[in-house]
Length: 218
View 1: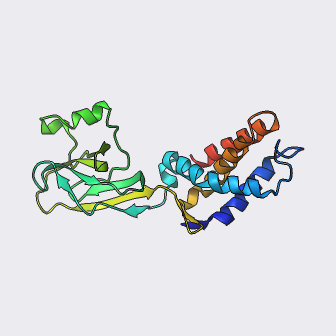
View 2 (view 1 turned 90 degrees about the vertical axis):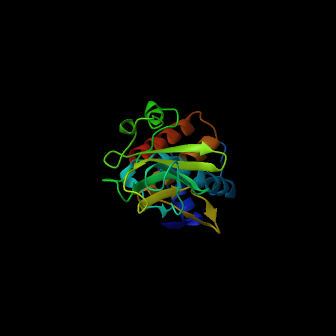
View 3 (view 1 turned 30 degrees about the horizontal axis):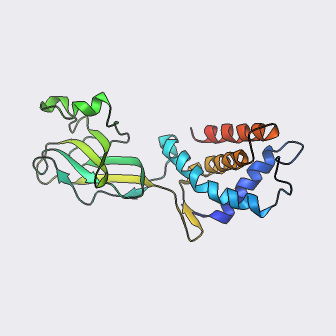
């Protein structure tokens, strides 16, 4: 869903205020200063990226579609292939080829043993329609999703391909996963408080906000 930065900033201020103890944050002075509002607006997209990249899968939205063009590693519809990911790609929601029994929601690391197995000359070692494997690798053209493997031939197509984009502010608005907004608000509050230092009361407030954010991410 799309949210305004101004509305989210107010929610962050409320979260900070609710965690303040007997005095205002050290160094702030007037708690309604414009300076704090500017800091919050700066921290919101950073908090959103951190939260959405690491939160539990069941809290993600359906995301955006991708996968218009496939480059096959050998023959169309047979074996493995790859898809260039959008420039704003942050996290995979799901990916499924038409001959796969299920969608993949997690990716293997390029430096992992499982990824190395996908390069085996023996088909039985690599992913297959019953147990597919997806990896995201960095190539000169950008991030690429590699998939292993297909067997149905040239009629194979991408059945489902969804991703979470990098959260960016556009015209005062930002697109966020709805269920993660509370976590993002608290995380932005945590980052804001850290700007004013980590000693004394600030440290307690920051810790409270971070713990609340982590609880809301799981």
